[in-house]
Amino acid sequence: MKNLILAKRYARALLTIGQEDKNYKKYGEELDAFVAFLKENSEVENAITNPRYPLENRRNILKIIVEKLELSPTVRRFLALVLEKKRMPFIASICECYHRLVDDLENISRAKIISAVPLEEKTLASITKALEKIVGRKIIAETETDPDIIGGVVAKVGDLVIDGSVKTQLLNIKENLKRGE
Picture (cartoon, rainbow, N blue to C red):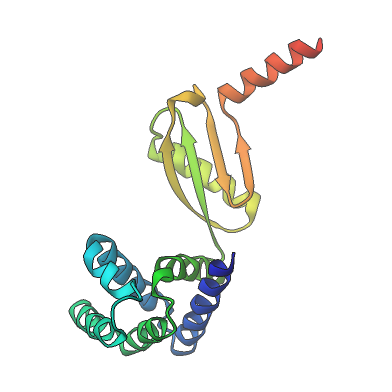
């Protein structure tokens, strides 16, 4: 819980700077690039996040990475601050929180749409449009297939779950029969 609070605090600080200079989208992309680089290079990630290594060595590694990725001065300073404050192990969480804050700023919700078979573009667009009406925000949909739901669709937007799967309908019928309805 404490890590999430810290991640939100750092993400909010960078977003505030990004809003002031109107580069918040660019900063998000640069954070993504940095986090992706660390994920692809686990040895480098360990070297930069592990407090057992001297701080000066970790600073030098960070300097090499930000130069290689050609990050903006603002993101460079931000990452240097994260390193100095010993928060680098939480950089992926900071990046995730940053994107959630940007989504809130732009009135966007992310939806996970699960179906038994892959959805056609037309069907996905229709579901997305219906979800936008329900939540009152623009929806960015991520699809997933799960043959266990048999048919229909399960849509998740934040805490809202709309379950139109055949599996759930069959379970409801079973429960109704057990109760004698």
